[in-house]
Length: 625
Image (cartoon, rainbow, N blue to C red; front, side, top):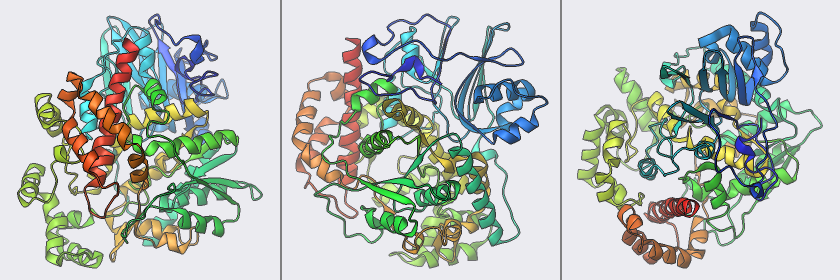
């Protein structure tokens, strides 16, 4: 379906419409994008379902054949909007629980003056909602609501929470009066008001118990094959992101199974730019070249292309991201290689780019919550044994206390103990750019505590807690960024590992399939034997994203110092951001990274995110001015 207001089509913003965007407005639009941005009339119309619902659908449905077979009559139409409309008319309130896909849907019942909004579980296109005295706008971008009359004032509470890495409030938007529809939620609006219902949460998933270790490998392999087939089925000429990790190589391997025998698979692998200095750190690696090359050597149908972003600035495409999303991306320091991969994929005519998202909290989970879980279950010997086999620099008993006992304690007590021991740096002295006083006065700390956000990121007591926390981190801002990429380059990004039956299966499997005899990611390592190179399958070091950040930040250090000096003259900026700390740390920085050192927190996180947030605020001021 066309993008909201066709942002990006045919103008300087980008080159294409997006299949993952939609717009419904029951209010006249004002301040619509001028012709120079490529705005044009919508090239789509709503599908009218059997029950009279006018359905706007963004994204993709999966398992279409089985869904059609479950319906009592033939579907009047071939596209996913028609199929969704038919399923909604038949299954009613249970519709979204019965279907699989990556989608957002707006359904308008004109006779009842009733609106129904829904987003698929786990991963979905964005959906924003604004209501005001009988006026309603539901759209893929907050910008559409602003064009219809919503207040375009930035929600600085949301901005401050994001800088504190608190993403737990999944309904809060980046603009004061514009809400979000979370994944796995349905919203109804009628003359009586609004109602919301979560039809899917990870905590409601059933436990999965199979007869043997091999049965888990077989079941997950089958669902992964099905997931890649379903996700890839609607696209021509897929490409993939490739790293040296298990997730992206699993996706690439199963994609090769799906493709015709004579077809090749383009794989894009980001590599650090000239001047990158690898750390002397066996536990991590910053260059994926050799591991990606090993996969391409093993699979001759893979066309491997290394992506060096060269001297792209830290602000590359930043204003366009601000315009299309209205947010300050906390992962902005990692976005340059995403831009470059999609630019190349678009030039090469690829219909979609796959990534390995949702692997770490799915099939390749490391199982490290196992000891705490087994401790609660009374399996103390099992917990003790696994911690011993995992190894580490501290004593066995110290590690047992940290990983099996401490996660059982109340989080506030654990935080207090960590502070007393001096083991965890204060966020306001390390990775968070906010002033501590601002965070206190403006409720950042209170909201964080109220929703259970832990700024120390201590070990969680269960796999379900960990998965819930990681899903919350990306379900909204991540969706906005994904859509912005698609609007800019015309190539969608999809995550086959978020295929709902696959994710639900892996989330229900107990920790002992993920951690066994001291081997983390045990399930993934077994199922990928013979599919990926052994040096990748058995590798226990982790990849560092944007490992060349010291090169990039050092190159622009003088400009960033000038920017901080300029911000210091703005009372609003000086009140919110700890600019003296940012300036001091940037000026005194050695220009390098170190193992276990504070540089990444002080520079990449605090300075990088702080300046991104300040630029968004100034961008909004310019737009409003």
